[in-house]
Amino acid sequence: MDISIVIPLFNEAESLPELAAWIERVMAANRYRYEVIMIDDGSNDGSWPVIEKLGAANPCIKGIKFQRNYGKSAALNEGFKAAEGNVVITMDADMQDSPDEIPELYRMITEQGYDLVSGWKKKRYDNKLTKNLPSKLFNATASKVSGIKLHDFNCGLKAYKNKVVKSIEVYGEMHRYIPLLAKWSGFKKVGEKVVEHRPRKYGTTKFGWSRFVNGFLDLFSIMFMGKFGKKPMHIFGLWGSIVFFLGFCIWIYLFTEKIFFLRFNMTDRPLFYVGLISLVIGTQLFLAGFLGEMIARNSSDRNFYLVEKKMGL
Image (cartoon, rainbow, N blue to C red):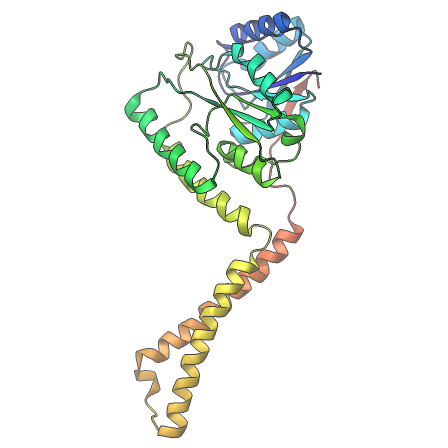
C-alpha cells in the first residue's frame, strides 16, 4: 500500500462526505494504492454513521470509534497503529487542509528521502488576534527550544515514513510535538512544505485559547521527559545530593561551634533551620529520583482509551 491517510475528527459529520470524495479523486488521478483511516474521537453529531456509510461505498475508507472524547493525540496514536501504507499522511477533517497537497508530500518522502515532512500554513485565514499571533509566538518558542527549524509545529497536514509512526508514542496532548518525538527516536531528516490553508466551510473550531497555554506547558514537559524521563535520578538525585550536602555542612559547622566554642543557643539561629530544611528537602528529592527510576523501569502503556467500534480494520 502506498499511502495511509489518518484523519482524527470530532463532530465533523458535515465535512466528511466532501472530504472523502476529494481524497478519492486525488488518489485515483495519481493511481495510488491507499487507505483512509478516520478516527471518531467520541463525536455526538452523527459522524460515525457517516463514516460507516462512506466505508460501505468505498472499501478503502476504514473507521475507528472511541467510546468518548480522548483528544487528538490518542486518535493519532490509534491511527498510527492501524496504518499500513509506506507513507502515512495526517490531515484534519474540517476541510482546511487540501488533499491536493498529498502527491507532493508523498514525493518528498519517497524521492527526497525525508523521514517527516511538516506542512506550513504560511497564509492563514484564521483570526489574526486570537490565532495567528499566538501561533507565531508558540512556533518560534518551540523551534528555538527543540532545535527543529519548523514554522508550523501544529499543522495537521504532515507526511511520515511508516517506520516513523511505528517508532513513536503520541500521548496526552503531544501531537504538537511529533517532529520532536521523531527526532528523539532517531529520525532527523525533517522537511517542511508550504501548504494551502483553506477557510473553514463547515462547523466551528474545537480549540480555544487554552490550547496555547497547554502548548507551552507541554513543550516544557516534553523537553524534561525527553532528557530525564528514563533517568529521573540524574536530575532529582543530583539536586537532592547537592541540597543534602549543603544542609550537612551547615550542621557540621553548628556542631563544631557548640562543641568547641560552647554555644548552646543553636535553635535560635536561622542557620539551624536552613540546615534542617536542606537535609529534609535533599532527602525528599533523592527519594523522588529513586521512586522515579522504579516507575520508569516498570511503567506500562501511558495511553488508555476505549475503542468502541472498528470498521474495515
